[in-house]
Image (cartoon, rainbow, N blue to C red; front, side, top):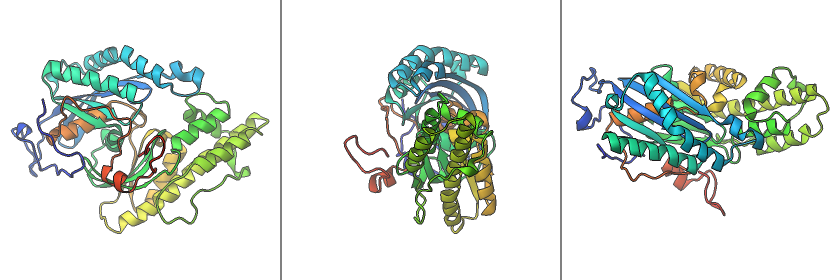
Length: 391
């Protein structure tokens, strides 16, 4: 079943090609440029998604991208209910995949492989997409690529432009907030991470405190457009620390308390603006430290921001200005590929497939799966406790 299997933690240069994929046309540098067409499946949270992506050299073409959102299923609970999410994935995965294949105008015989998210995420949902991918790969005799959901976000900017490695990455979403040096496929090092909550979680929880419903992040962004956050003083975390870590729990607590005192819609709008600015400021402050350190050792200066929070226009503009200040080019994925989608999973799978990196059929779903496993083991951002390490 497996074309080749190598440790996902070891750097693989694009020159290192599997014999199975080295017979096609190659570029002047020796890289296989034969188009690889991959079906991607994403079920790690509350979106059931399927996509077909064709990778030719360094250029990715999205042939289809179908996302079924479960927002209506979870709205009454103010957040994602894992059991409801898993059941919805079971009900929708076959139809969403059928639509993606139809929109790409392909049959399974037109695919070179199948990629599926294998973690991290809500493990019940992850199991649905991964199991469907295994079944399809077995039935059609196709290679299977188990993809780290975070690696999908890491390469998502490549869906809109040809992006050369290496680059500095800020991955900022509802469940993750990390600064990473990305050197190549499967070769990433953590520079900083949140020590408590993710920025997207802070957005959602504060939005819930303001009565904005679910999903909270986009609603808070809309409300902030009507506010003046300068009249509200919110705490700044980790001042004086020399590392690149983040913390949003203090901000979340302070904003929650202020939300209880809001008497008018204008009060709520002012708080929303203050929260958005505070999150943008901390992301900028910590990224600025990482940019300065990265510039000392790298000539290729590219700052990539990915994940759901990258869709926030204020945060995107703030980080773009920060990158320019340090002489970095700035890149974020197209808006459609900031939040969870299967195109990024298909692309990550295609990049791995081009290097002969495939998965055995017994690969397991993982609720936690750090991008930099060596660093996570030697220096976990969350120490083991009753429920184990978070990263």
